[in-house]
Amino acid sequence: MSAPSKKLRLGPLPDTQTVKLAFACPARLKTDLDRYAALHAQTYGEAVDAVALIPLMLEVFMAGDRSFRRAGASSKAKLASTAG
Image 1 (tube, one colour):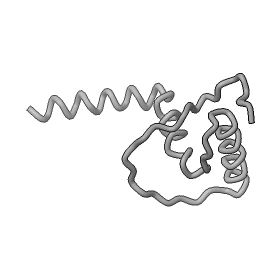
Image 2 (image 1 turned 120 degrees about the vertical axis):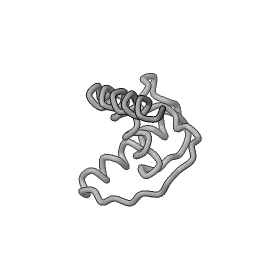
Image 3 (image 1 turned 180 degrees about the vertical axis):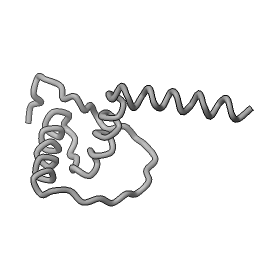
């Protein structure tokens, strides 16, 4: 199977330590996640299921959220000033 020429926004999966979380989602979202996982596998030549993609998707989403990053930087500064 040849890989498509375009790259997905979500790149190859990194190796990471994990913490188990459980959540429920609408069936429609699960279907879309499965479709994305299939496209990801086709693009990068490595089988992956939707469950493996969800953490990286959330990480990419939060990294792209400017307000979240600003709030994180503000929180880190407050913690640093109270630690010493």
